[in-house]
Image 1 (cartoon, one colour):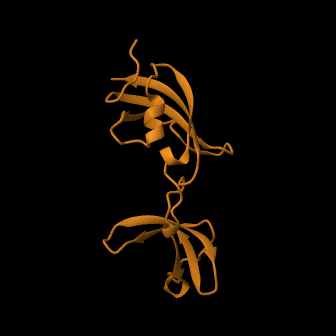
Image 2 (cartoon, one colour; image 1 turned 30 degrees about the horizontal axis):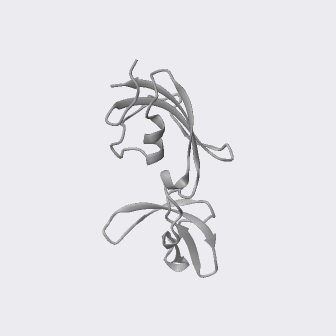
Image 3 (cartoon, rainbow, N blue to C red; image 1 turned 90 degrees about the vertical axis):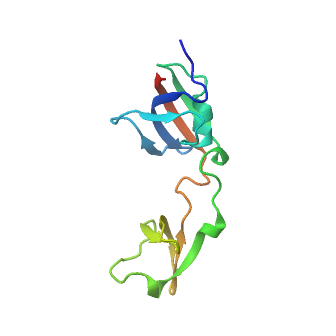
Length: 142
């Protein structure tokens, strides 16, 4: 029976959770996730975590934030003038918005604070700074 090594194409079912148990993503009820191990398609900790698994094996891996989506970056938290906020869009803490940078690339921000003259936005990935837990089932190795 073969075991997963770098360069293999694999398919897995997974459930991703935060340390508090909150499930943030799962492949259950969908097609298994396919990727090439070690090709940079997955976060580093997930890639490392599947190495050595066999088809049919279930495993729980813990991924520290530095092997996941990295630390929260303070420069990605910024103030946006309230008077430039679209009048038809009511700002609420926790609301996610799409913005565009100077080069025309879209990115997602989350409203984290509302003040009299500005809104504080966070452009970090929503899992930045989080230690992650994945329950994985190896479905296929090629």
